Image (cartoon, rainbow, N blue to C red; front, side, top):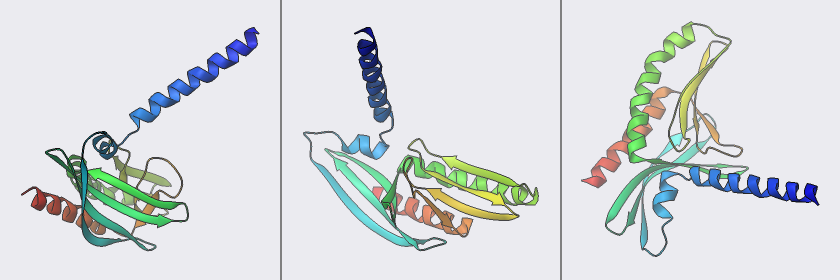
Length: 179
C-alpha cells in the first residue's frame, strides 16, 4: 500500500511540475492572444519569401489587436514533413535580433579564420527563436531555429545578408504600421 501511495505521489508531482513548465514556455504571442472573453483581431501583411538553402519560407507581419492594444509579430513559416513550423517574433525581440545580427556578422570572419573543428555563434530570444551560424570544415553556414521544441525546426540560409535584409524589412514594415 505504501509503495502504491509513493508511486501515485511521484506521478502527481511530476505532472504538476510539467504543467508549470508548459506555462513558462508560452510565447509572447501566445500570452497576448490567449485571454478569453475579449475580441481578438489578426491582421496579416505579407512580406517577400525568405530564400533558404533548400526552398523558401513564407514571411509576414501579424498585427494582433485586443481591446485597444495592438502588438506586432514577424512570422516566418516553413513547411516540413513534420508540419508547418512558425516563428512569431515580437517587435521588441525583432529589434534585438537586428542588433545581434550586426554583432554576429562582425564576428563571422574571425571565427571562420580561426579554423575550428566546429564553432557555433547564435542569438536566442526569450521565446526560443534562434539566429546564428556555425563554422565547420572552413565553411560558414547560417541558420534559424523557428520553434523551441520538435523536429524539423531548423532552416539554413546561404548568407548573413539574406537574413539581415529580411529582418530589416520586417522591422521597417512594423514601424510603418505603427505610424
